[in-house]
Image 1: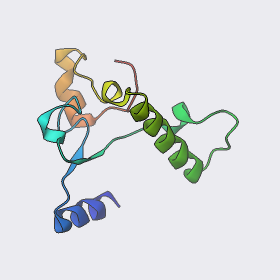
Image 2: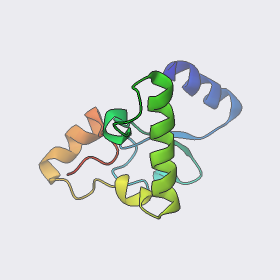
Image 3: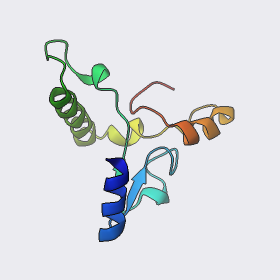
Image 4: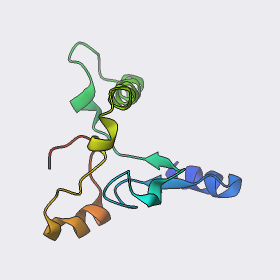
Length: 102
């Protein structure tokens, strides 16, 4: 599905970036005017009272990120520049889960 999404975006001229692969902070120039893919961990975001399902995971993830954006916290969640320099290459290769502590 990701390959299909990437191909569709390329075909339609939609700038697509993937955090943190394209830069350790979403505020870097690499992300300007782009749609940004991120990895989230729904179980860390879903309320215990919500039954686990693909649709519940998707909804709680989107809602948590929307709220973080509305509250001005999203940029900080998408910034791992504070990680130890010796780990930065690994993070740019392996990725990072949004909101996980450094």
